[in-house]
Image (cartoon, rainbow, N blue to C red; front, side, top):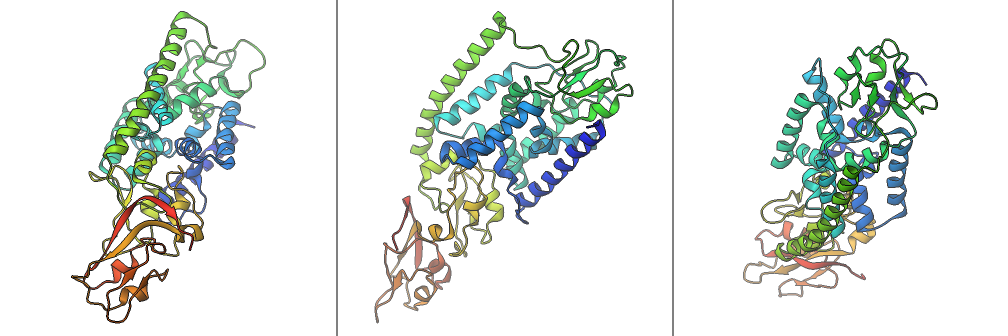
Length: 432
């Protein structure tokens, strides 16, 4: 396969993914669930509720990386696609080379250590999928992070991908030993430096004729730049290897590896404590069906806000000072009885995937009538989709707690605000 074909396939895949991402995050439509193959949500879904499909998808991405290198970063990562757009807008003539910083290993160890310890709190601060989703949904943190990454991209190229992103760090370690790599044909290369000047990840050392495939994001732009075809992509079988050096059991590498694993262990222990602290501080609020409990959801929700943007009733609200994750505020609306979209679009498993029937039997709250305000109009009785409200003649409406799921339809229809929905401590599936 020639270089132009490789570049076209990569570009077409990236454009297609970008369209789906923007459409999904902006709530337009979500026909193909590409977010399900974003790595952070996948790992979180496996830890939250392991499914065979999630395991296969994660394995597929790792195998893809082991065969082809970090093509995930240039085709499927939404923040990676954003950085590529930034590079087009800045249109720098020369991008700087980048060193492989050891700090990224410790950032990855802290992020994944606390995740394995039970909380996504640290990971969602630095995860590319979460940053992109929260920015597109209008959160201040996401917008600030996206602006800083845009500035960093214009200044240093894709250094976020090469030396900060924890997902990129994991993929880089796999890509380092990938079967197919970018490499320099020493016989054809004239050391002009054009490829290095345009490389967004700064991974080409044209003087020594080496390519760091750990940080190379496989954008394949360099293949079309070389007039002498000195850059190639594939499995190098003959000649001296001109890629990043193989693992060396040097004292420095050993110490860095040992320190990284120690950091991972410390972060895991810290994650256990942090998840408990978060659980003790959060309030019991109404949460999407499938979120289980306030404590569980506060530690599992990535705050990508995909469910918020796709909620047809617009009752899902972003994290705020009241609660550190997505939650429900009914206002004048309610949770539609025939909708389970939030559980279907959540890629991380923080909201369990419920069938419509399961959702209709999941109790997220409980309605209560204030007799001092109620005017006994009976509208709530007619509006309740589960017939959980009865009204004896001449009496106030009665709520059956064994049937009410807290959907809020009664509260929305009440003309005098006599009905309020209180959250349950732990969501449960009702038998009826």
